[in-house]
Image (cartoon, rainbow, N blue to C red; front, side, top):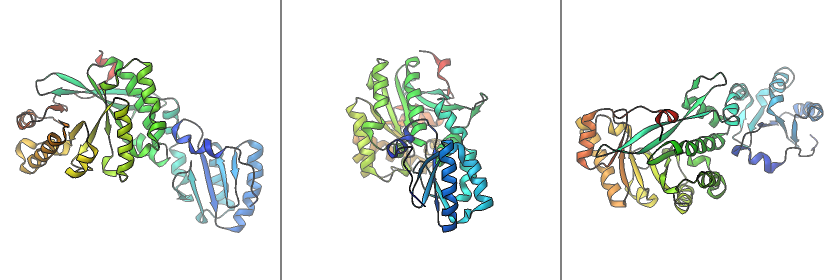
Length: 341
């Protein structure tokens, strides 16, 4: 296939994960006959403005033109010998393309920032509100709530986790003006390429709103999937330099070794809800809770137990030495606008 000019621009495409915009699909052909047909397709798409780029073995198409292109491939090409990827994500067999097209709705969630911040209180051992964890909830186009798991799964499949994570992070920072105490905000470390570039919008927004950085605690989520510890450390170092604190979420899953915890040195360590629920009567869970508490105290982190639903569990953890608590025992997450300052 003949090379054609790069209309989209590689730098713009590689940064699209950070922002809203139309996705670009790169399709590769393993069959020479398909490559010949692709030249005709490219000429047509170039006239309509849907062609982003063409190389010797691939064609890059804006998503708006992909559904018709896929149908054409089924009738006139060899889709079983074709692969594609979206916005420089992972390569997939052509048969998975309909799934990506069905999940286009998540682009609207990101572009229109249809995020509703919810918050759940975090309590001290004395029964006072220490702060809140801000949790993202999402709106469909018709106004109904969409499951966060569904939204993040769609974003992950479409290589849009960073853009979604960024929208949620900024919405949480904005909502903090309505909350008192510390504000705990989740973030996905595997979606952050360069802390200095990817996180500067967060620091800029706190300054713009006149908020003290010391109020914010950023929680590492999906910690069990963090393979590049050095990259995670660079992210946490950036947060520290900006005056923020950070917590490890779901400790007991991804960061279960004391050695790694000492290396990461979190300001807060969260006991996973699976270990906290029923801890008052379960020796194995008591052992897990005790190990985390000892490690937290050794490295100077504040131990926080989440997922507390029963008073017996709260009393046992408080007596053991836990200092902060979170769970349905004190309230379910609710819209920030209903909480007030």
